[in-house]
Length: 179
Image 1 (cartoon, rainbow, N blue to C red):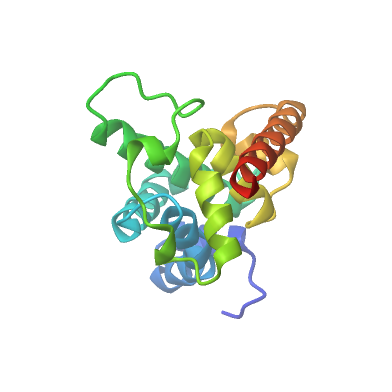
Image 2 (image 1 turned 60 degrees about the horizontal axis):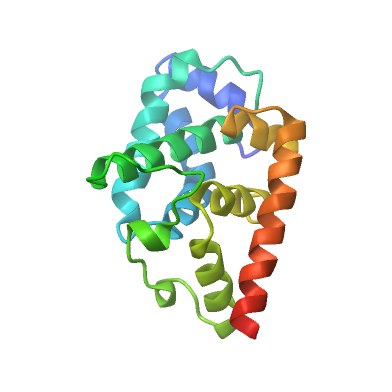
């Protein structure tokens, strides 16, 4: 197999029992999924493993109407939400309103090497989880509104509005920090 093999082809081969195809598919997307969890957890390894295990379980339900990448990010997002809900004792966890700063303590210096990155990560973490995830997937993983809609299970138009609101919220936080 070469690097030009599509994700869908690899998934078909993997579903048919080709373990090498599955390993190649995971290797292709591991860094992005790891980065997704590193920004949200002190123990990203556990979450990455859970997300890929979820992918393994759901691979036969993937209809290939979306890219494998968005399918995998949707699984990662659901894995994160399940993890946060299970850690939270209060039943009022709401990813639309709860920020990671309020849920878990994650030192920004763990990933950030420069001061600007530290401020950005801190600002992102002060946003509600859904806004943080939306901005990271859009800017760091290059998902467009349609792909974000697949991950969040919402129409692309709704995602554009939410993306605009998330940008505005981030600007506000960064202005407060700068002031």
